Image (cartoon, rainbow, N blue to C red; front, side):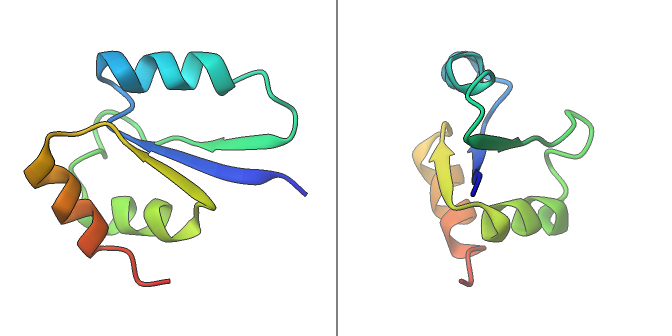
Length: 72
């Protein structure tokens, strides 16, 4: 079983480092969103709910908004 990982804020410094550390792990599937779609709430909601683990690499207010999108 591959664990699905989503890094919300993957284009920032911390998100880039996390993706770099995890990208070659065969037991993980990194869910990635394009830079153009990162502000699309529906796409973001899909990834947040599909992931087994989410890293929030965002400011506090944006992190709270992302957590509110998780329904599972």
